[in-house]
Length: 388
Image (cartoon, rainbow, N blue to C red):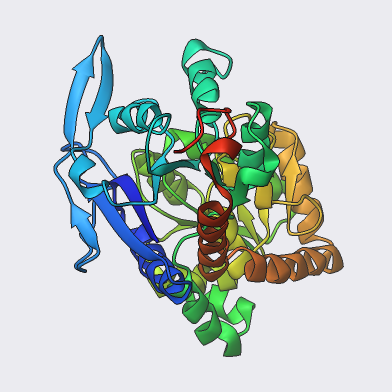
């Protein structure tokens, strides 16, 4: 049996996933091929080529139709002998429409991998999202990012028994190694090496952009400082809001800016901090918080990524009302209640074992195997014509 995954691009954080999935499927007697293209010039993330015989790079064609960007992925010749094709769920990928049309009359089986909806859409009930929801039913299988994604898919009318929740993750080995290396150093000692003098240190780690709400972070930090006099803030990241952070650092000596930190280097900052201040959009930083034993504090927003499903407020992190005062009070209270904070760290430990790249690969491989075994034309979710 052969399965092909088609991705618009292959960002660096998907390479380890693809290689591990290839190995797991091979052990199950299933061949994997990967097809991927390049990004639109000037955009990120960029494709990171994977040099292996089973991965094929194509040249995406980016077009504008009626003011809307669409993408054609020229790879039909690479799909003719596949038993299952898995694609990203996206309205702009023209290949998806062709494959959905073709599945009504011939092979291969066809599956979506995605969120179920655009989590950042400003019109969640608009025409585009309704269109996406209607198409979500016309596949043989769903690989949902998280339980939140699964719930979205089920609301579209797709059957639960044909959904695999993969619990999206990225390669976490570097951060895990870094945290292991920090194990013999007291957090307070690590904080001192990073320039902090106070005993209550928090961390912001992410893009310095509008979605991460840097203004909110800085305002909340000042209110926490008023409640917890030895509070200090480490900021890791880069982006268009960097000047705002630099100005705050010059004005407030208890704010420390470290720029972008990659790989194992990030571990020092997670180890030094007692909690993670992320009031803006949450994605895979949730997994970093678990590995770093640094409980994540966020707010009730409509545009979090699907990984917000991993956060269990009061167990492995905290979600507050979406206002600076509520957020700052919660952070201050937890800093002043070490036992409560230790309980959240224990929840992080448990969650770090559950939400890992290796677990994601196992879930995904199991879903592929089930799809190939169970999906027949007569059992398809949208009751299409039977496979001859």
